[in-house]
Image (tube, rainbow, N blue to C red):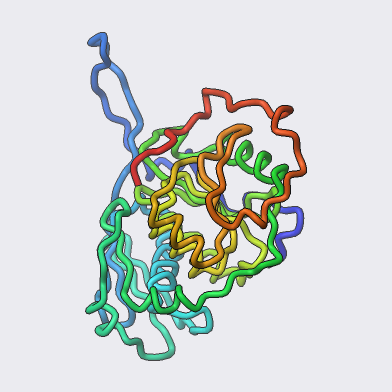
Length: 294
């Protein structure tokens, strides 16, 4: 897929009534309020005949979520051929069928819990691949791109602006957001991006990954495993995330809000081509919680 000059090839649909439910309550004055809240649905993933995991998700893009999860857990490789993906909405089950047999049982023995919402996991052999991963040294992050990206992303229609309580991830190229995914857990949103890249044959070498969540070890590992050299968040860092980013040569930019940002790894990719003093601060209307839950 060519991404030249295109933006938001995939984006949230806050008007999708299946993703939210309106509930009634009272506010601090005791007045009745009607509020949209995000729905959660169970999705059980099978790889061929093996049950892998049950995830809690908002329910959009189940195919991309399933494929991305398997890719990011090293259960699929980018070279694998997917023969079919069967999704049964009523049974809340999705089956990914591949041409080759998998080493599912061995991987399940190496499963490790991470700090992600909704019980994120990684598998032991991922760290072996992480240690040998090579990221592009030619990629750049111009500050002008960063300022344009944060404004475009934070003002784009989204479930977050509609109902809150959700995380977003965006795949970007230069100053263009390409694919924007949301979910109740940040790792789900990441996996949807990975699935979208796989389905559309998107190369990662010159891409930028934006997340609304914290820059944890899980976020760093998944970004590196996807081959993306630059990771940006409006939220903060964990020490493990910074350490792993330095180890992998990943550019790690956090607290990116308005004119402000902090880079704690991979600073050599940043090109300062814009005076921050000419950049306006964010409109409070579009402020997201800045160090929020995973």
